[in-house]
Length: 132
Image (cartoon, rainbow, N blue to C red):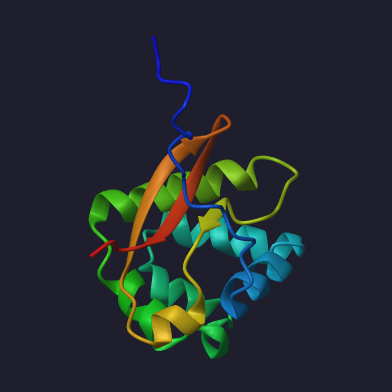
């Protein structure tokens, strides 16, 4: 029987993505032409940072996020592609993102890790600070 005197393990509280790049991407997703471009670039296997540039969002892309995107494993990139394409097949045009690290933390040198995990039946991109 579980020990009910212990508090449940705390999971990092999901933050509302407030990074300028995420805000710009979500704003762009309201436009059907933008969504079509995203779908086509994923189908063609564009590198993620090249997609950001091609979509005109590179002014919002801070260097630590660029570095993070450029160094993702092929499996994580594929997971991001699949999660994004699944979102595009719905009418909820918001990046499937659960991020608990801020741009300020990244700019201060905090390292982050990215995983794509199921959350409430939706493949979701999780970005967390690396625990040292």
